[in-house]
Image 1 (tube, one colour):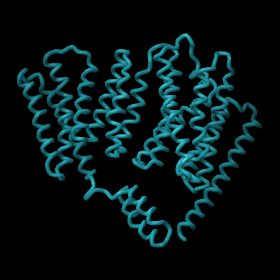
Image 2 (image 1 turned 60 degrees about the vertical axis):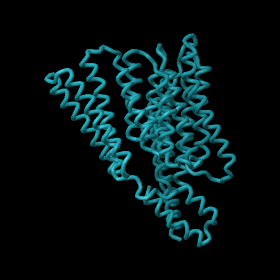
Image 3 (image 1 turned 180 degrees about the vertical axis):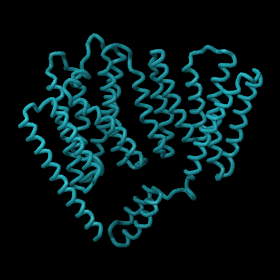
Length: 443
């Protein structure tokens, strides 16, 4: 990214001299991609310092565990608190001192947080504290969270993300206790930190952690599959809207690929599963008498968030004044929220007597529409990724329908002939668009 930014800042003045862009456009482009601070962040030192801190911490924990029985009680306490204090003090002095030693200080502070977590379990073992064990992950996670905000530190924030997600999972799996506060805490506290530091790494950890933590809040009971499925579908659509908004608002444009990756992965898998009639019926089958406020909120809150986000996308698209938008095409922008609405309608009107294909049919059409849109965009702009993904989606859908829809050998043969012809035509159109794009860039 740094090399690309440097290249862009070197090229923009020549574009202005050649009359390709105006002075105001030059300033806007340079403001959107500012030069990094002097020297930039020493990411190599940061990564290796934090990785080394984690490995050293694990090694110390293993050494303590091996010789633990031979150490007297007060010696154990002195060892736990003394090592924790020494590492944290040394780390903070380095972090607050000269800039060149800040990555090393951050690594030592991360080691201190690892020792803090080990100390929680060791003190509990010394005094034989038979406590609710997920509370250990909670205290450890809150400690990492406090260090992440105080320093601030992306490494500490990622550790806090992992620990709080584990806490939520142990509460749900081990004690059947949904913890609603976990996804809210991650979003409200660490989300702004990722945005402020423009950290795609932290954002890439927060998104799956929030999805998992929200999944752990699933209310108990039978036929709960439809709640989890519907919530994940809405949350993935919300991520896709986030990809579009962050790209076009521009304050954290580099976050768009992160949102797009997770949103597309979850959304496409769920949409593909919905194209199977039996699975679609199973996902949306539920008993009306099981509906409670908790279950309603679990499904409606992500649905409302997705619809509001896509409303913002529609407003941005209508008011931007651009003839063509970068990224998702118009059919994709329409089909993604349409899928969420179709799922919501199925939840409201579905009964056990509805034909399975009546449920899965619209999702098959949406899947075909998305595949065709990706293929068309890739062939039009000479882009390999949408071309390949659209083709793969089409092939997967045809193969699936080969087993549950096309019973006649003649029909199956015709379908494969048509699909093969489409892929051949797509290859020709893509090659031509790629050639035109290359020739246009050479002029």
